[in-house]
Amino acid sequence: MQRILSSQLKAHIGATVTVAGWIHRRRLLKSVAFLILRDAEGLAQIVVSSTEARAQLEDLTEESVVEVTATVTANEQAPGGVELTEPAVTLLAKAAEIPFELHRPALAATLPTQLDHAALALRHPARRAALKTAAAAVAGFRTALTEQRFVEIQTPKIVASATESGADVFRLDYFGRPGYLAQSPQFYKQMMVGVFERVFEVGPVFRAEPSDTARHLAQYTSLDAEMGFVADHRDVMATLTRTLSVMMATITARARTQTPKVPSEIPAVPFAEALRIAGASPDEPDLAPADERAIGEWALREHGSEFVYVTGYPMRKRPFYTHPDPADPTYSNGFDLLFRGLEIVTGGQRLHLYDDYVKAIRAMGEPLDAYEGYLDAFRYGMPPHGGWAIGLERFVARLLGIANVREVTAFPRDLHRIKP
Image (cartoon, rainbow, N blue to C red):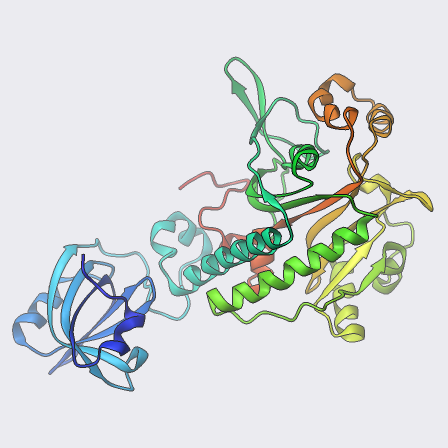
């Protein structure tokens, strides 16, 4: 099909062109009709004045797919400063009556209704914008890490044992023997540090935790990275900071979304100090959501930063592969990154010596043979290393000020939803 997009119309004033897309809205007035067409780049206004063409419009429904050949005419009041006149409209696919309107600034349908009709609701400009922001975030993540010598990898999502962490897992029948959906690529990306030194992955992860909140999904997209030859977790944090800066710039450029400045050095606060700032008990092993919000407010007030690292979480709240703080082994060389008062990244330095892994696994009361393939990497020599994981949906929701991660996910999976 020889067509141009709505964003290109201004360069063709006076010419006859062909556009194609969905009928976003019809406005049938007494003497003239307006057809608003939506394509991948935006909206185009089509002016229909002939009796024959107007009669054709009365038969069409919103979201029907049409091809329009018309003259591009300047009109500063129209979307993009141009409109299409003297059109010839060809129907490509007629849509059924839609259950809710898409031309309003915000969808009036409830979130469950939107999710039930995802194929339609995702066409709304706000829903599309959120997904475009997510795509730009992933593109920036890939660009930033490739520039820093990372190699992209792909790891299995069906695994033999549920041993990565304490989270519940999805079990499945794998050709007559038990299998599990992967909770993260953690083990594999560590193993691949022994191959490429620096690796990253963009892929789905699965958590069967019975969490029914606005910030949890049973399947989400994880942006993972792992890097070798680090001094400690601070090297990992510095690389993550650079990565976030490129991600934000890419989102602004590609999705036309305003993003906050990422400081060249994001403020960092030790866990014990974070509890004090939040007014929490010094005996707490983790930060509650209210604590995270208080620390985010503190970082903005004291440092002008919407980002803040919390470092040195207690080892009892970190996975077994986390490297302890040499100065106090009850605390970890781990960190979380809070963005606008919400944890969006977890990371840290990992153990890298085989004997340390044997001790850590035995301390959990787990059999070594369940970790055999993983332990091989350390048996054959691994450098000091560390990494992080960003939850894409949670990050995008926070960036756009959207309360529920389901609104930035095309087809969310949670406790109650496994379709469409």
